[in-house]
Length: 390
Ligand SMILES: Cc1cc2nc3c(=O)[nH]c(=O)nc-3n(C[C@H](O)[C@H](O)[C@H](O)COP(=O)(O)OP(=O)(O)OC[C@H]3O[C@@H](n4cnc5c(N)ncnc54)[C@H](O)[C@@H]3O)c2cc1C
Image 1 (cartoon, rainbow, N blue to C red):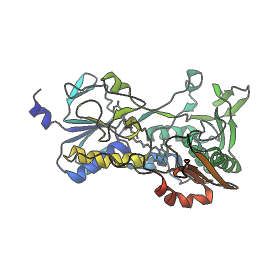
Image 2 (tube, rainbow, N blue to C red):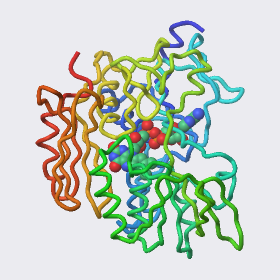
Image 3 (cartoon, rainbow, N blue to C red):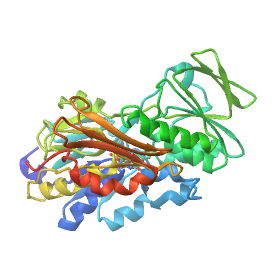
Image 4 (cartoon, rainbow, N blue to C red):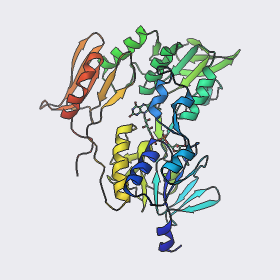
């Protein structure tokens, strides 16, 4: 393989999620002819993943959440999209990716292949009544599963578990949440803010079993029993496992790329292998794995500039996370490190303003709920950026 042939090869993006499509759009703004190819293991539908936890509240089916199919996207972005095609390996030396026996040469390769759901042990996850929802196809399957059913048991009380709990309640389901943590959104929210969210969800009719783990799931008459570590048994129709996500790193490790919690990149989103970049949920940018839309958009803009000849580092300001629990709105900017500072909390019912300050009084993070969410923008301006200008 000569370098000339390599130069004629396309930029290949693996993944058709928000990271893959945002990058393709940003690239097209800069260069309408750059040879571009997308490879994706799903059907390539363009959709906004955050909307999956708002389907019932907004009255939208899985089909209504789809924005455009792969064919429409391929025309719009003037690129080839190969759908239902799973990349099985990378050969960085040859500048090629593998799809089973097939090899494709890239000029530059972008890994935008997202994160996997953390799978609970087989005693739970092998049951047909247990599902996870991490993409539109999963959601379509889940909506078919809950049709005509009433009782949903959610495993996991993180951001996604809480959002689904609120949305399913709005859809008229009986919702029970089970999690080993003693508060909702541990690691993301300070306790008073978490307490406000739990109480608000309870007021909507959600039942919580916190501080206990699900140990196994059994089935009978089309229903599911969830057996808990404290000996209790919950009876439901459908179980949703929402216990967290982990960046997809397996193929990158096998190809010899530097991998930490995610695929390690520098600020220009370059991995340790020449001409291979990563962004979105799979990437660890200078030590930061941020599985949210705002960092992915900023990364897509910077990477598009770099790939079109203008090397540009990603800059991430303070990026507040908005939790879509309409019964108790939340905005949170978790402090980079919880140590050396203290939480200053004001609380009025389920309206909480929690500010994390260092010894010098500098604001390092915050969590606001209810009426205080209005302060989100002003507070974000005070918080230091995640990745400051180099
Ligand atoms: C329910 C829910 C609600 C959320 N709400 C918010 C929110 O309110 N705000 C926010 O900022 N973030 C939110 N997030 C997170 C946000 O949606 C993600 O950070 C973002 O969608 C990740 O996009 P991605 O393109 O990196 O990954 P993905 O969307 O997971 O895309 C990965 C793509 O790679 C493909 N792929 C994987 N492996 C291979 C392979 N080997 N070969 C070929 N293709 C492959 C997949 O098929 C897929 O197309 C939410 C997430 C969920 C699940």
